[in-house]
Length: 171
Picture 1 (cartoon, rainbow, N blue to C red):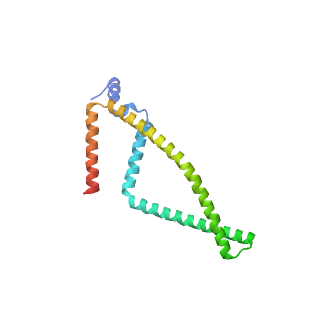
Picture 2: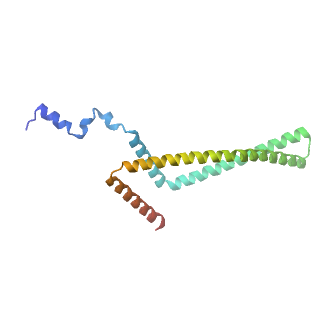
């Protein structure tokens, strides 16, 4: 059976690939689809590799504490040598002086931190409340724009997900 050119072009318009001019149009993803695929990949990675991620995180935390301890020891030893050299003191006196110098430094840092923490707290609370109000407004707008079928689908997905999480966590 032979089709004319007019029939071929009309058939081509109804195919799924007719809207794309070349293969590059098929490979490009919209930003929303790219974000969905990235989130799905990260979630599946964390689900599958949670023990490796947890042990690596603990190893990094341990290494950080070891490095901090070494830095503290180097600082303390340097202060010991400097004070002993400048003031010509014995070991016990040097250690007492270093202790009080470091205690004074820690007190200054804690004082400055206690002065700035309330301001950081109020800024954080303000940013969090603004973010929550924005998210609440967007959620209400999205909910009002949904059709009845979309609302039913959202409620059923929530119930199914909550039930699945309950069974996965507690049973």
